[in-house]
Image 1 (spheres, rainbow, N blue to C red):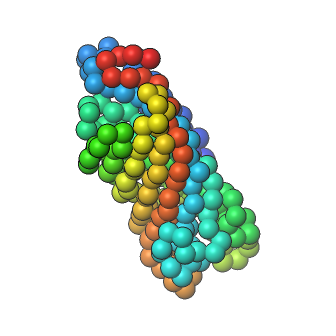
Image 2: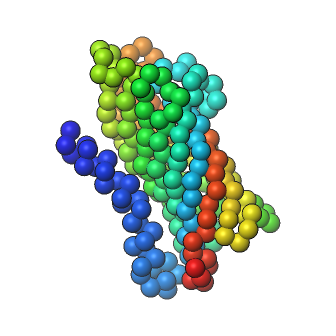
Length: 205
């Protein structure tokens, strides 16, 4: 249990320091002249899967809502890295909480004028506390998570972009021992937010 607490505390710190560590190196040796760094926030609405009869993103009552913080480090014009921390702590059933800390590569599928579409695959950890914990039949734990997804970005200004993001999470080792959940958990949903371009291509800040 102590190791789980330590890991939970360390993961968001690692996500925060990854871009700082990379940018701290020589741009030519570490990320090259194409590198850009952006960060921002989103509002997320997810189907938490647990106790929901459907896996459709907006077909659960109540939906899981909450904030997301993210960064994007684009090492080349078409590929880079994505990191995020999401806390789905609002509007769920009595006391239910879900949070994830994920990072991984992303690839730009297409760009047209100011619009870019990206695909991503993220890995990391997920934490869940089910409703009415610690009553019988409830649980609290941490699990490995992988999550494919896609992001649509619209460049509003030189340093500001609007985002819409879809993510499908797989918690393969999750077993609740309750009817309908003797399998991995699959939360999925949408996030909407803004990104601020901290570092522009060519090394500009």
